Length: 112
Length: 111
Image (cartoon, rainbow over all chains, first blue to last red; front, side):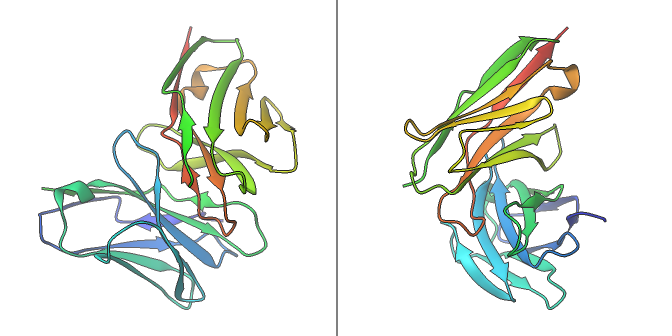
């Protein structure tokens, strides 16, 4: 079992650009959640996808959007990047029958 | 609203017990979690407790929940250097795996 995987590992972008991050959930999981972890902080919930639809959303602007594919993998898109978007982006997967989320290793995004 | 607080640092000697504390504000929390994060890595689920439980033990880990005071603790017995990491507590207030995390407690284990 590969667990939750994310790509790329690291990414450097400049202000105003757009970025797409990818996540494959743990085998058997159908729900994907995305979190942003700024340096020295705990992760903050961005949104969650289930059955290819956004089911829950945290306090993030519309520049943050996502998608879930029929194979349950997911993408996080961020438009018009700001310096403050620099963070570790974590993907977590779960299923309707489990009480726990498992996290991937994260994508480190640096905005210059 | 949801708010989770933790102390920032804890230093212990190898072989001693570590106790990491957490307070939360949402009384509707269904599950409370402890995650471990090593430098440059993602989050590793350590253990969790359902809100109708007072205690859960899993090998070297003991979780205590005081629901009246909204206080959660993680005790690590016989702490080892490999336990050095940042520990996050998190609550799932509304269910559905939308977690609210604390700021993390950095545990340093000294020889």
